[in-house]
Length: 310
Ligand SMILES: C[S@@+](CC[C@H](N)C(=O)[O-])C[C@H]1O[C@@H](n2cnc3c(N)ncnc32)[C@H](O)[C@@H]1O
Image (cartoon, rainbow, N blue to C red):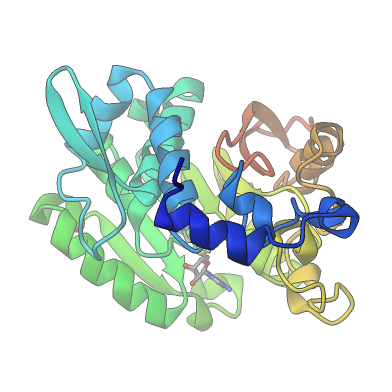
């Protein structure tokens, strides 16, 4: 029997010194097992990313993709996609807009979106959530984005490209650097304030400012943020990113270091997190769910009790 050229070479290069030493660590990342069983965790390809997205899509109902299609153009910026065919119709799905539809679905499950006229989003990135809510909730009258000036430039360009004129006219872009005090805000009370993946990257005093001056005046506050910090080495980053010196560990309100791959630690951290992100004592949680893709992120929807402390 003759082996393939491939295995001739692998046997010579990777398995020429099999013995007790080899047995001790051959399944560590980067070692010979990546040619035998599970692919290497440090895979430098898009394989794991695309399978993750593919499997997440598999679990979604048809309605999810009907909403996704209603977004229109989701290809600006050239994202990585996987193709889903439902009810005979193909849709190319990228992770950013996949999350946008999840966010829309979470909100729609917990509040009557027809009652939401004024939205403020703090830290909108390129504008994917605004894109989804303006396309899918026609009753939204105004949508204010507060962000850093360079990122606002991107979201305004992006949103102008994906929205029609009427939808785009509902948007207001506010430079976060220009709002040193609450008087400068001038965006009125919102029905819904949104913060996704960004309070966790802001200093606690900045979050306090946004909570005290914006979120606590809204009827609803939707947060989707990380419930804790993790040690870089748990995901294969160099452990030299030490908690004491790295700014990331000082940001956000959920700063405890947790094992994000331990379900019971996640459960404890979630309870703490939901309390930490309550805009004021007058808010209560009316909906919550961990993210399926990254369960150390938590969707939390808070509602104001109008004068009644929770
Ligand atoms: C990781 S991105 C998340 C973007 C978006 N929410 C998403 O999930 O696609 C963090 C966002 O927070 C914004 N940001 C950072 N510091 C801010 C501040 N002090 N005020 C407002 N936005 C800020 C960034 O510019 C960026 O848009």
